[in-house]
Image 1 (tube, rainbow, N blue to C red):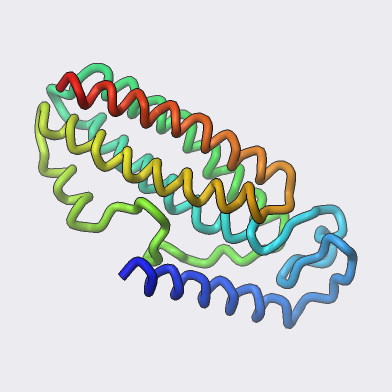
Image 2 (cartoon, rainbow, N blue to C red; image 1 turned 135 degrees about the vertical axis):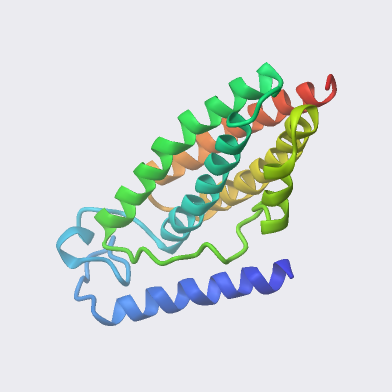
Length: 193
C-alpha cells in the first residue's frame, strides 16, 4: 500500500511539473519547469524542493489537527499539552512559509492530501484519537505523533540529500533536529504514563 501510494504521489508530482513546464518560457540556470519565468531567474530550486514543500504542508497540517484534538480534551497530561502547543507553534508558521515558497516559485498548489506522506495518520487513526479520553488520549497522541514525526524526518532527510534551495534545506535540517528532540521527549513521557 505504501509503495503504491508513494508511486501515485511521484506520478502526480511528475504530471503537475510536466504540465506546468509546457507553459514555462524560463531558461535560466536556476529555472525549473512550471516556474513563473518572471521569478524563476531569482530562485534556485529543483523538483525535490518543490515536492518537499508540497508534501510537508499537508503533513504539518495533520500534526496541527492532531494537536488541536488533544488540546480540546480534558484530563490530558500537562506535558502532552505543552508538547501539543509547541508542535502547533512551530508547524503553523512553517506551513505558511512553505505555501509562500510555492507561490513565489510559481509552483502549482495541488491537493496532495490523499497521498501517502510518511507517517500520516489514516482516517481510522484520527477517529481513534478523536474518541480517546484522558490517559488513553495522551498515550495515543504520543504514539501517533512519534510515527508522524518519523515520517517527517524521513521526508526532510530526502530533501537534505536531494534538494537545491538553501532555505528549503535549512528548514528540512531544522525539522530533523527539532522533531528528533520531540520524539525523545515523547518517548520519555510515554514511559511514565
